[in-house]
Image 1 (cartoon, helix red, strand yellow):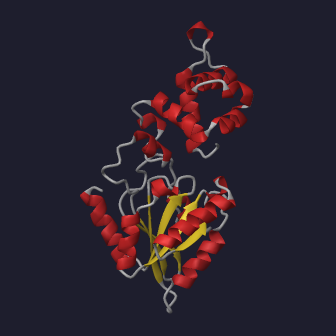
Image 2 (tube, rainbow, N blue to C red; image 1 turned 30 degrees about the vertical axis):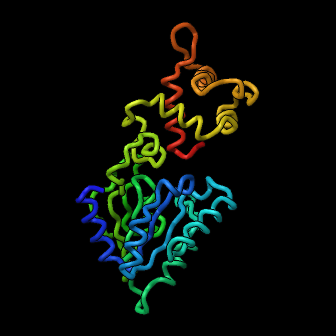
Image 3 (cartoon, rainbow, N blue to C red; image 1 turned 45 degrees about the horizontal axis):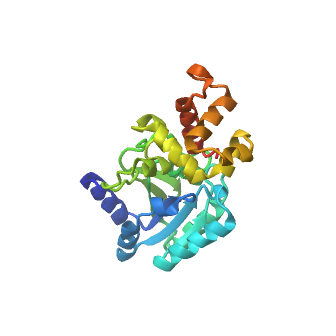
Length: 256
């Protein structure tokens, strides 16, 4: 991580009594930071791992991730869909149990850009309290922010954390650290996303017969999407560039 990030995160851990690590349930391994988890525990802080976007995974998959996390680090694990406000009450209960005897607490949030921290803050704050901006653009949160969510209870948010050696553009796209406009090769990432999602999900989302998709490679599938949408290029072929953008954007909107 860049030095400025390290300094900010160290400050965040130092000032916090409880740390919430927000992970994307679809790919927790790519959004976990085990070095930070160990540092939090070494500092004697309480850690709650929040598996956000849990509505996009099966219960069996979530339980498997929970078992893996708790087997590696001393932490509580909560399943959450911040956007749908599912699991918020359970998270509030875990926070309540982790608070000191005086009922006061500073709660630090860590996670990759666009992992859902701002949506989570707004859900915890509830109506009538200060709200924070929500954006799908990577790097939207700037610097440490302190938000009051209850009497004597504050949240501290930090910028998203990206390891400095994280150079795989597809991984950066998956965790929403890079949006389609920031990609160097949008079509290649779309091809990888087709492989990642699998043909069944693509067929169901775009209402294409699975039997047709099964016989096609990834580029042909993107062309099928374009034709289904009526996006034609020269010669009557499907516009693969436009289909690539559509697939990438609906993925980051959690629509597939």
